[in-house]
Image (cartoon, rainbow, N blue to C red; front, side, top):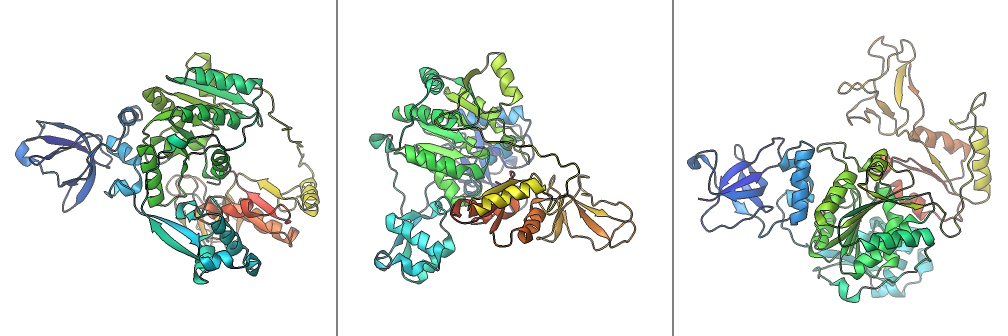
Length: 543
């Protein structure tokens, strides 16, 4: 009787054997429902099928159900995942399940669910938009719906709020409908729709070099100073790739970088551009995953985990800001998406572009030893000019809210001119430490010995290293003193400190604490009108 060797999402570097019932066909990469442990059903992935097992056949349990008619993985992606499990010394079951959307891990069908979209009703098309001027979010949403329907998964990208749409629905100005997804073949109608900038000599040389070797694996470091037009090189390369009927994968380091990138790509190409990042819900992620596998998606733009998306005809991989540490997976299966992307490009036999103004040392080494080739962009593209920079010496200065008088003066000048201001601070939370003023005790994480960070708004201490948390102590556990003081400044404290200094200016804080949910403060910067005196605060860790 055939035996299925099944990988399960458990921290064991082995597979588990199950009997296949007579007449049941299954291949490597398919999911199966199997009994595992006591009174437990688990979803597993078939690694292989053979006629033997190391265990007696009478001790093997049968496969409960075969969930897929064909492998969920393309042959090249399958090879990449098997290699990655071995290279990173991680159990194959956890690696394979990490590469799947959550709904597929749970055993849900690998096909499209109905998609929902918002549309303006007849009353919504006729109503005067000025009647909604006291509800700007509703006014913005209705204006968008009058232009076109809005799919539910596009709400975040278009900066429309779900509560605003629900309010319009209550008024009878819009409604929600579902539609069965139809697979569209974009290749027959593909064209470049947006404005194409004129490439300078260095950009044209880079595009030509990559295009000349687009039919096989090649790794390119696109090293260009800020403003040198690396994105325009990406777009021009993708023009050639899509013209041949192939797909493209574009990796960006953080979710906060994707809206601008998405807008530029969608303006340029008359082809489906899909997005994959942690801000999507489970159904949306599965939908994009399926579109890429079927070939319906022409371009997929996403963060680290998007690397494991299966493609019908992948033609190029682009890694923007390849030096960024966000490409490193820090929990569970630890891997570097940049390095795996290079291996996947080799497995797919396609070119890969690694773009950066400050390349990683590993990438520069690979250029030196001849594994990668370097393309330089040394001139700023178009009318771009370098930003004016000034270093302020803080010695002897009286700081307010942790900021120097010179900086506060500049902030005031820009706000007076109706400009916006962005401040960057590399510490999340209210303060990076909580100190006892009497004995010097500092709150340390019991799990990893790092200092706890004080999050005053959430009323707890959190370890930013292992993510454990505890309540804020009322007194020092070492000496009993109640004189506990926050040490240092984080984004939350800076926000509170700036409010009295600029009382009439809206302040938005953008970090992981405010952007961890859909519709959080992360959209405040994008929605703010340049004409408003909006002060925006951002943390580089957002995303």
